[in-house]
Amino acid sequence: MKNNELIRENYTEYSLNELEQDCWNRLVTGASKSRNPFHTPSVATISKGEVSMRTVVLRKALPLERELRFHTDIRSTKWDELIMNPSISALFYDAEDRIQLRIKGKATLNHKNEMTAKAWETTSLSSRKCYLTLHSPSSFADASTSGLSEDIEQENFTLAESKAGYTNFGIVSIQIQSIDWLWLNHAGHRRAFFDYSDGSFKWMIP
Ligand SMILES: Cc1cc2nc3c(=O)[nH]c(=O)nc-3n(C[C@H](O)[C@H](O)[C@H](O)COP(=O)(O)O)c2cc1C
Image (cartoon, rainbow, N blue to C red; front, side, top):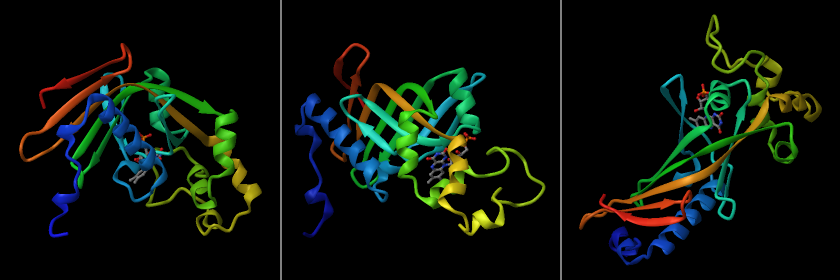
């Protein structure tokens, strides 16, 4: 194969329904493959009229439920922002396939429930570390620090000790309201809008 271009999908031939299915295939793959570009979306929240963005790891994409999930520390700023205002947006871009998804939805916060218990069980020791800082994420420190004790930093802790982190472990579940799909193409871009609030799928001018 001379050129990657030859094996790229030609999305001009897709119907709206096929494109929507393609969005979900990409999200499901993004959640399961750590090297996939859809694995680490930017997620935006609103706090007192100001926008905050950050990168998160996409942990689950559920097509039937039209739901996305990511894990976070319930002491983090975003958690409080979402309590105040559940509006949330997630931005994905696959540079190779030149596909952007702009997703809007409402967040539901999960803490110490069946969903978090199940996810915590399969959370590795190194990921559990993130929930074991003595002080809350975003608190200021006197010097450069991970916020972890030396033992925990070196992963010298037992599974039982790591359970303390469960208290700080939360799952943000995004109920998707719309997906704005954009494909960049040299002969002319393409754009579509999937609105789950009224069930309409529409083409847009890019
Ligand atoms: C590649 C990458 C993945 C990240 N994944 C997560 C994540 O899944 N959950 C999370 O809370 N923070 C994650 N972070 C850290 C956030 O981007 C952010 O810095 C932190 O959560 C504080 O955000 P907040 O102050 O808005 O709450 C990640 C950062 C990077 C660079």
